[in-house]
Image (cartoon, rainbow, N blue to C red; front, side, top):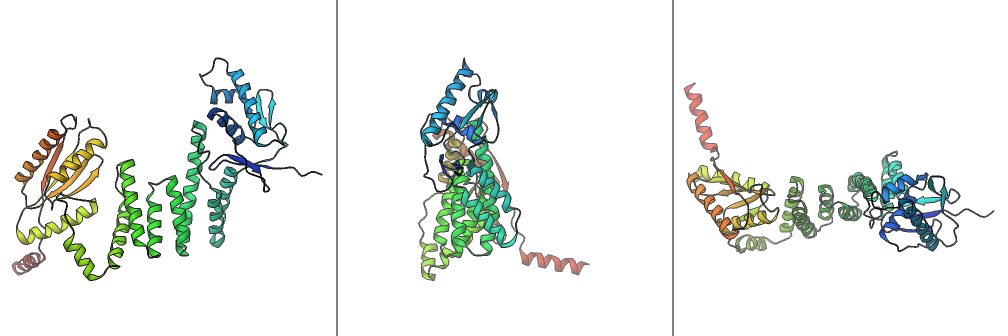
Amino acid sequence: MEETKTIHFELLGSFSCREARGGERKNTTAGRKALSFLQYLIVNHARNVATEELIGQFWADQSSDPANALKNMVYKSRNLLKNMLPEEEELIVTLPGCYVWNPEVPVELDSELFEQACLDARKHSGREYLEYLMKALALYKGDFLSGNDSDWAVSLRRYYQTLYLDICKMTLPLLHEQERWAEMISICEQAAAVDFGTDTFIVYQMQALIAMGQPERASRIYQSFRELLWQEFEIEPSEQVEQMHMLVESMCQSNMSNQDILKLVAEKELDGRAFFCTFSVFQSMVALERRHMARSGLKSTIATVSLGNKVTPTTDARRLERVLLEGLRTGDPVARLDAGSYILMLTGAGEENALMVMERIDRTFHKIYSHSKACISFRVLPLEPAAHPAEETENLQKINVNN
């Protein structure tokens, strides 16, 4: 008795088919709509697909004769399958009011195998749990039908992406426990290709690189992540990512000799602009300045600068950032609050002088970018010096004596 062949379709990544038992992988070329139609029938191979459903999916308000267009598309799909699988007979069967995959020809989809593997992994624990997670990850070769931008394909693509990213997040801490650093890095790189903005993957990747003694590489990855995050979403990395970066930078410096570190600190050339930093670094600088004010008696001021609503996103923000960095003193720190606002510290400047500085920033911006519709607003707040520990002790002693 001749054994029934199972056709294996690969939908995760590039679309192709083969016989499940070692058959040659075969691709096809077709128009986007024809290929999407065929893929829709393959994805729904387990049920009867009504003609009304197909017309609504592919010819909604786009054809004067959708019934005839449907028949022509089914004809094209059968020819595509015949080119891919010349030994197979009719694979798409016509039934009253619907179309169905030939039930006598078994079909296997890698997307369904992946989905089942994800479900199976959750049923296990211990060593087997990690093994099943790794098997599930190995099945994800790429995004679901990556070349298909139809609405039905995009929604399923997001579903499988979510499944994949969840499995990655389950796997990484287990690999971390077993110190399987190379595998962690590989998973993080692949997951970042699906969703680069998730902090989890950059943190685990940096941890693995630190454990492998490659802090310089971790630093480069951080810089790329930070630039891309701002370019795409106009946000800064999370506090957890910044803390990991600080650890990476300290490790990079620990690999240097004391003499090299002194040269790095003392001889680094300044670019003549204000100091642009992350918000967490800005907070630390403010805390240091408050301590300095307690000893020196000088004044300093905090200011926020914001763009109005009638601005060109990103463009006006970068313009304002440039004016701030070039218009303030070298020692004045500046940090980004969000896409259209910044916070800065004017060291040694009282509230009156700070207002004058901000008005000058406003004038400079509109002089350089006279066509911009941005309406700059700013607020200033005098910085309070930190309480001096010695003074606090003396005050407490006076209170005790008086009591």
